[in-house]
Amino acid sequence: MRSVQTSDFDFQLPPDLIAQRPLAERSHSRLLVLESPQHSPRDRKFCDLPSLLNSGDLLVFNDTRVVPARLLGHKSSGGAVEMLLERALIENCALLQMRASKPLREGQLIHTAGGNVIVLGREGELYKVQLPISGLDFFTQFGSVPLPPYINRPPDGQDLERYQSLLARVPGAVAAPTASLHFDSHLIEQLQVQRVQHCMVTLHVGAGTFSPIRTENIDEHRMHAEYVVVSAATCAAIHKTRAAGKRVIAVGTTVVRALESAALAGALDGGLEGWCGDTSIFIKPGFNFQVVDALVTNFHLPRSTLLMLVSAFVGREAILKAYSHAVNQRYRFFSYGDAMFLTRAIMRSDL
Image (cartoon, rainbow, N blue to C red; front, side, top):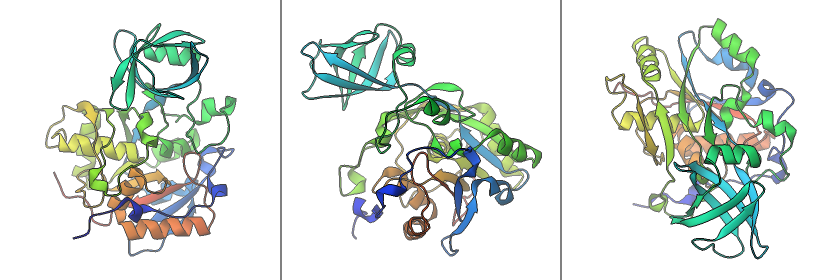
């Protein structure tokens, strides 16, 4: 039997459809609705989302907050070094992605506006470094907004507000959970009036989210780890929603990864104690979803793990047809682009 290949998740995207800036209003983006593989996609506005939800449904958001995680420095020789915070550690240490013309050595000094960064060594594809102060404080003071590599401009003042969800609370992410960027205060109030419930998880999105798949056989790909917190209150909200026969709706693929990781750890199997820890879950076609019934998500890059996740959710052929429709209808793609509302073809069974 042929293995699933990375090339099975490719599609052609005109570069001018990659959104370079957000729209003037968060909820004015477009929304492509795909309710099952048997249905044709429908073109809606994101502000129409309440009409797709029912009283008692549960929206689950990721409350991670993006930190100014990108910082430029230079070696003593003058060579430039680009640093991207992956994770803050104890004792003023951190794990970074670092790009330089030559590999960096243990003990090497990187000079920055905030003081010297000392390279302590490698940990896989990351560098462990010593910083002058704690990782979050250092990058908050001296870093810049870490816009994705497909946004071809430097960050500006608008990005400080718009590359951040209104519900962001817990600092630690280097990329925004972009599905939540479409929710403005008016839309949130509408959903509350409609008695659509909401709760939070925390998944600190790491720089690895932009790393390409380097293997053609997707089973050989190894995911990066990200830190997750699914609280006891969120577990209780999910149990209450399911007991009432209502839907659990993930706002973004990070929420899917958090909830399904918690389920695999047994946190949602009759218990309400919550769960936290690292997850390197790779959700690809054939995955058995246990928690999520519907998904609000942006459009994802060709050949990416996130495109594989949404393909697992509604079917590869269905998602690629929907993406083809989006290209033909000139939807805006990626972080500052438009959104989709996806309903599982096969609803999850009880845990």
